[in-house]
Structure formats: structure tokens, C-alpha cells
Length: 80
Image (cartoon, rainbow, N blue to C red; front, side):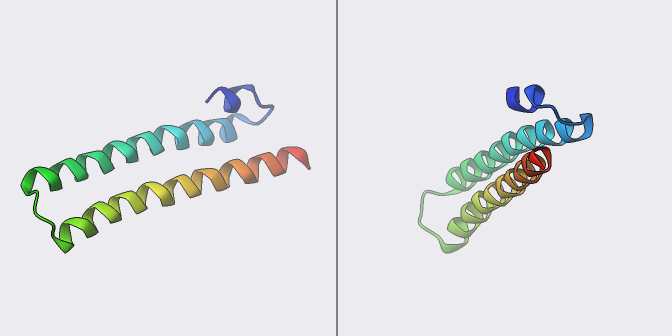
């Protein structure tokens, strides 16, 4: 967030980067909630429980890749 504020970028770009960081934290909260609910239901090893946890983790990773891509595009645009 500090980098997004300090960089000489437009308000829209700054807002996008800050929002992306906050959304990654929100996705991590959702991932943690899913993992805790799955663990609370049963400690047994089940394929569907593992798939639910893996899917929630993948959602966080995909969102982080998207935000990382936005950072790259904005930085490259700033350097051009």
C-alpha cells in the first residue's frame, strides 16, 4: 500500500493497486474460513474436503496473480 501511494501513478491506478491488496487479504480470510469449516465438520481424510481446501487456496493464488499482473502493467507503463 505504501508503494502504491508513493509511486507517481494516476488515482485510478493507485486505487486499483490498493483495492487489489485489500481483496487478497479478504480472499485469505475466505480461504481460512473454508479450511476451518471443513476441519470442524470432520477430521477424517476425505477427497471432497481436500478439493474444497485446494480450490479455496487456488482462488487466493489466482487473485494474487491478477493483482501481481496489474502491478507489472502499471510499473511498465510508468517506465515507458
